[in-house]
Image (cartoon, rainbow, N blue to C red; front, side, top):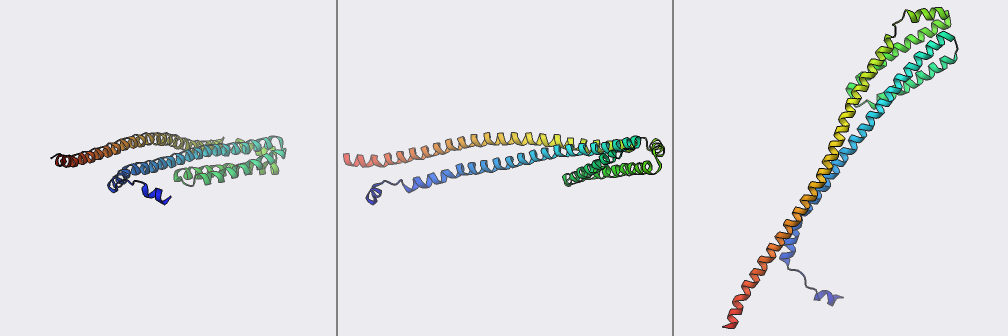
Length: 238
């Protein structure tokens, strides 16, 4: 085995050095391509997560408004019928509203604008639920007529309208964020594709340049060897 290794012809040191130096541009291209691909891939993932986040916010805020509507309807049904079963529905709606509100608070923690909108929604809901609670007390303590009069002389639905307005504002803001995030995702996907094409083209160009460089050096070396052997041949002939 050792004898076999000794018989191997190793390439000239200059050729090894040239190939090593020529590999530097190719290594740089590969490293740059890996970095850019990873960078744009991570941005795409982040934007997709933000899109999912926006859809989640829209779902929860819709559920919040539905919970308040259910509470309002349950109280009206209780006023009319006096059936305590509607109070059970009312309490369930309050629990659902509280869960949705807390979830929205967690989802919107990174947006000062949306946190402000949520605070306005919470205030409007608190005012509406407080009025509904008082109406329930009137129905329990003073009967149907008193509760009916309280509803008739109330805010005329302005409380629910205020909640709807604030919910709509928050949802519209989130939809604008959603459109922007979707556009950003498409842009990052385009950047990723263009980066791949650019790196592939650059890789091919670098390979060609390296091959041409090696061929040029090899040709010059062969020419130098031929030029050096010519005088020796002339001297032998003389």
